[in-house]
Length: 154
Image (tube, rainbow, N blue to C red; front, side, top):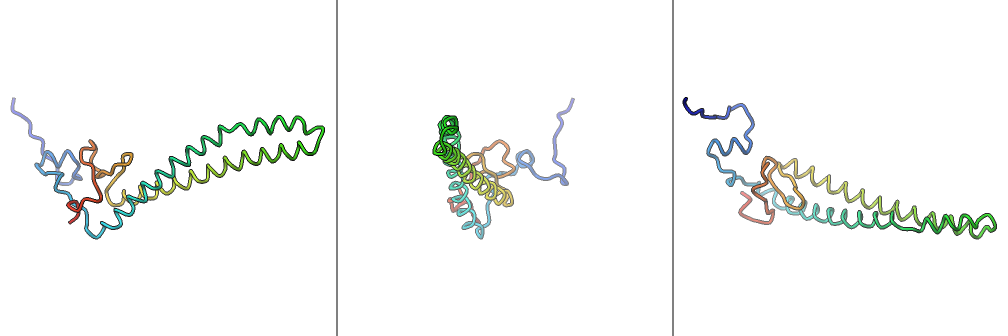
């Protein structure tokens, strides 16, 4: 039997498989020089948001792991005999929930910033895998993009 030759249909969107089978080189792709400044700034912004998310997520875990609520519960048992212990218990519960709520707020702010910059990069045909930038159609993650490489822009 004869060998079957796979040829891509012209009405299909070009993906990485089509580039390779058509003999095109994915290394010849460039980004717009007018987007260079915005791309670099948003890359820095994404890394900043990602670092903030990591730190605030750690702070949230630490706030939830705090055992202040146990002391507040013990003081609540003594609150039957004294208004002072009732006030101290309420203050400790307030402190615990304030720390958890504040850490949660910072965590969601950083997460929203990451998502916003990821959407911006998706609009440019790029995606993040961890802290590394790739073209959206680079499914094998073979070619990382360095936004500070001048050879990438045309």
